[in-house]
Image (tube, rainbow, N blue to C red):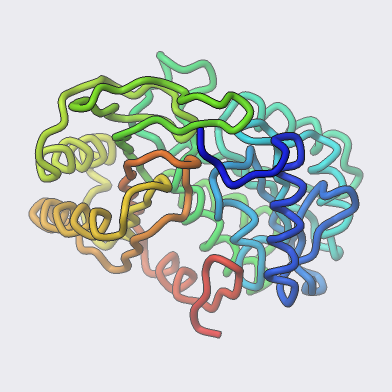
Length: 329
């Protein structure tokens, strides 16, 4: 294993320190690095707080800023943050209008955010993201996984919160955006968790994992590597099948890299996906290509389609100023 680290036990602490110093005009670290928070909080605005295991950067800390999250709670690599982290973030970020937790659908994340909500004395609510079509509820204990679609939920809700939408309406909007969003991923290699020092799983030179999770969880199947068009066709097909009658109209489309695939390949995937979506009546109203929800050093990518109405597109277009996402400022 070749990693640019000092001591495995200090990796997260040193990374958070570097992140907050590099983006000191936008974010600060909470006490004991329990959370990362916007430098300036807007008064009487619902605070949006997310979090999860580290290793998916820039999710979530990279999306802390004006027009998006108010705080993010980083757990250890691929490990849920603890309830006391979430509670501290809520207490520090609430300016009087309550807190909305945005939670990826993993057992530890859901359980710990629920505990934090029970401990929090202010007004709070949650939105759970579960956009991964690779997993059916019958085969995964908590249902579908929350993956790259989480970023789309965070962006749209971030804009709505800046517009002073109240807590109940924000929760309803988040559930609507999540319900309109589907993702499917493919891995060409495993990721390597630094503390483990070896790949999470093994793939042959000519194998890929179709439907892989962002922590290296098994996908739908392991198959031979073929042309990009063929694999994209399967990914887009799974998304469209799951969307059903929703797959008609305008969409926000994200081709998300897992960390080790070059942009050249990601744009090729986008080109293939765009053709298929347009052939099936989906108009790509907004597009993003890049590394937004990664899996350490995994090679591969995911495709996310969010069927978006005019209100969602309008909120998507509103300004955002965060370390990893910036426009309209």
